[in-house]
Image (cartoon, rainbow, N blue to C red; front, side):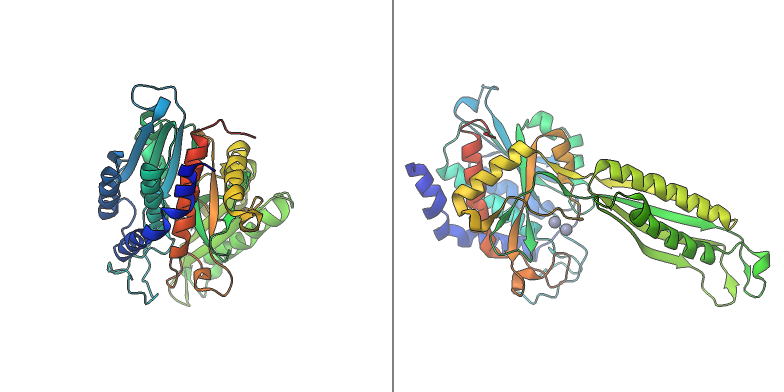
Length: 406
Ligand SMILES: [Zn+2]
Ligand SMILES: [Zn+2]
C-alpha cells in the first residue's frame, strides 16, 4: 500500500471527522427547500474554495460545482479523465420531531431525507482528496438543488453542467435506513423507479341526490375508475416485472343529498423499466377514458412525466463495487442490492453519462438509524460520514489513476 493510501484510507480523516459532523448538524439545523438552498450552497462554496477548488455557483439555480484538476488532466490538458460525484442539498416540508439539539430552526422544513449528510460527506471527501489524494485528471464535485421532486439535476444539466464540466463517469450515494450502518449496496441496471403523476378530472351532471336518473354521477364513475385501475398492474404488466399504480387522493362532493358534477383523482405511477412505464401510461388513459364514457362522464387526464427509471451502467457499477470490496470487505458490501420503487433525479444524469448510484446503510432494524426517510423522526447517521467520505476519496484516486476495469 502506498504511503498516500495509508494516509487517506485511515489516519487523516478520523481525527478531524468532528468538523464534518458539525457541518452536517449545522446544515440540518438550517434546512432549505428546493431551489432555496442559498445558505447551504454558500457554505459549500466557501469550504470548497478554502480547500483549493475552482468553484462555480448558480448552476441550475442554487447548484454548485467544485473542480480540482491535477497531473496530465490539469490546466491546459483536455485529454485527462474526469469524474463527477454528486450530492443533493434540499430539505422537505415536514415538521421535525427528532428532539435533537440540532433540530430544524426553520419551522416546517426538515432534512428528513439525509441530504444534509450527503452534502457533509461530500465535503469531507473534498477536503480529504484536496489534502491527501494524488490523482491524474479532473474531479468535479456536483452539489445539486431540488432533488425532492424539483428536478434540480435536470436544471443543472439544462444550464450546461456536463458541457461546462465534462465527466467520463458520475456517481452518487444515498443513505438508507434499515440497512446496517456503513454497509454499501450496489446494483447494476435499473435500481430506482420512474415516477409519474396524473390528475384525473371527471365531469358529469350534478343534481339532487333523490333524482339520480337526472344526473351523470361522478362519484360512482370515480369509484369504478379506481377499481379498474387496480387491473393495470395485476392484468397488464408482466408478472415478472414491477410496477406501482397508486390513487393517493380522491375528491368529490360536499353533501349527502347532492350529486357532484366533478370528481378528481390524484395518482402516482412507478415502473422499473422504460417499456413498462409506457405501458402503464397507455393503459391508464384507455381505462380512465372508457370507464368514464360508460357512465356518461367526461375524463380529463393531466399527465406529468416525473423522474426517469434510474439505470446504473454495468462497468461503472462493477468498478465502484470492487473499490468498496477492497476497502471494506465482502461482509460490508452487497453487490446485488434489490431495486427500489422510490425515484431519484440522478436518473437524468445517468441518461447522459455512465455511472452508478448506490446506497449506504443508515442503521439496521431496531437501531435509531432505521427510522425511514421522509419521517418526522428521521435523522442522518453521522457514523456514515467517515467511511463514505473515504470511499469517495478512494473511488476518485482509483478512477483517475487507471482505466475502469471490468
Ligand atoms: Zn427524499
Ligand atoms: Zn433523498
